[in-house]
Image 1 (spheres, helix red, strand yellow):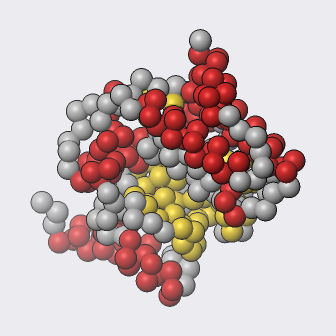
Image 2 (cartoon, rainbow, N blue to C red):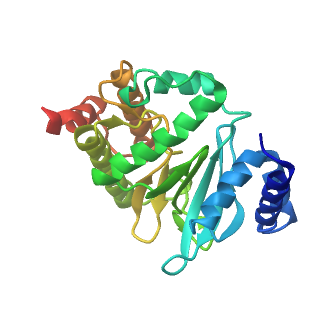
Length: 263
C-alpha cells in the first residue's frame, strides 16, 4: 500500500512534469495520451537526464504518439518520445507479430503486457537494425510503454516521409537502391523482416537524400512462421511505390537480392 504522504509526493512530481509541456494546445494532446503511470515513468526518465524539456506532438495514431523533447546531456540532443497507447492500440493485431518471436515467450496476454512487450520489441529491433548497418533512429532507452530514440529532424521539425518527397529520377533510383540494400542488411545481418515497410515508414534525410527506416515494432525474425508473407508484402509495397516514379523494379529479383547474402 502507498501511504498518503508518498501519494502526495508522487502527485507533486506528476504535476511538476506536466508543467514542462510547451503550451496549452499541447496540454490538450497530453491529456488525451498520458495516464498517471505514464507521466510517472516520464518523470523518472527526466530525473535520470534522458529528458530535460518536452516539446510538441510530432505525430499521432491509434498505436502510438510521438513527441519532441530535448536532453541536455553532453550538449543539446533532440529526442523522439514514442508513447504506445495502452487504451487504444490494437493489441490483438500486435499479438500476431509477437507470437512466434522467441524473444517474447511467456508474456501475459493482457492488453498492458502486450503493449509493453511491443515497446521492448521495437527497441530491440532498432538495436539489431542499427548494428547491422541499417539507418534507423538510434534507440536510447525503453521504459514501460515509452521508447526514447533519436529525433530524425531538426529544431522539432521531423524529416519528411518518403511519400511526401518530390524526387528526380536519379534521386528515386538512389533511394530505391538504398532501401533494397537496407532490406538485405536487415535480413542477412539482423535476421529481421520489417513487415510493414512502405513509403509511410521511410523518412528521407534531406541533408544527404538518404532513407531512414522507422516503425519497427512489428518487425519479425526471419524464422517467424509468417516471415515469407511479410517479406513479400514489403517487397510489393516498395516495388509499387517506385514503379510510380518510373523506376524499373522486378519483385523476384528484389527478393533474391535481399536473401543472397544468407545463402
